[in-house]
Image 1 (cartoon, rainbow, N blue to C red):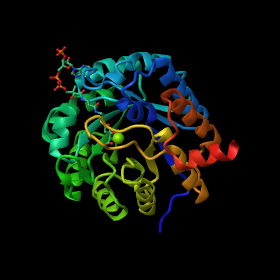
Image 2: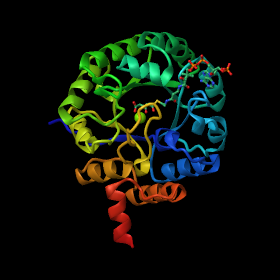
Image 3: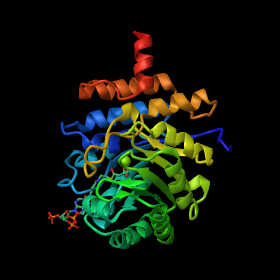
Length: 301
Ligand code: HMG
Ligand code: MG
């Protein structure tokens, strides 16, 4: 097995986590969450998305949040952008990276961004070019890489196709995303291997929602292939508004606990991360959706 010695985590809590919250979360709370994540050692944070406020009202304060964060050198702040209209607003907010988000399933593409896979690639192409010309990094998310809420199981060939199309238009790295958390380790490895046909190990990340409790096992399966970039969400926040019933991403606290226990470096201070998770969970008036955070908080009490 080719386990990495170091892992880089992107905390997507402020974006993937909060986008699904029904109650309003003020920009000041989102800004404070970003601050606490960087103070805990996160070096990549997905802050917000420049999508239609009619589709995702919780992200309507995107510009305010981006203007309010206190940027720290060495931290990469990313934002989701679905089209040129989103890019025109996003560029003013000076992100380090934009994320275009496509899908390996036709029906999910339609429900999430209102166009087919082919149309999505045609929409992304000019904005990828604009971002690259402006020296902004470009990541691509491949949703429903193992399963879709509308189509069921998704074949690795679908992931291979979207990875190929993203590569052709200049997307620099890709997230293999189990949007609804139905994947199990071997299926996740097949999806990863499909994306690895077009991207190197340094340019692939795992993005696992934890609906069926498989996300840590899936993370381990990806690590075994040598994948060392992952997305996770502090306190296990979140879900996608266009994937009903799907829960949040794997909790960052759980991933960090597992990695540190395996001697894999993350640069993250688990105690401070638990505090960041408690901060947002207190605001949302619920307990962190993380077993490691719960155990650490119980031990402290
Ligand atoms: P559309 O309705 O087809 O867009 O939506 P349109 O181009 O026809 O425009 C309709 C209206 O929206 C117009 O306004 C546009 O100006 C406006 P009107 O003239 O009617 O007043 N508009 C915008 N406004 C602000 N920002 C924009 C924008 N674009 C158009 N960027 C669109 C298409 C893509 C905009 C819409 O479907 C959308 O916003 N979808 C976003 C859905 C979303 O955010 N989903 C969650 C994120 S993805 C995710 O969570 C998965 C991930 O975590 C990985 C995984 O787990 O799988 C990444
Ligand atoms: Mg997601």
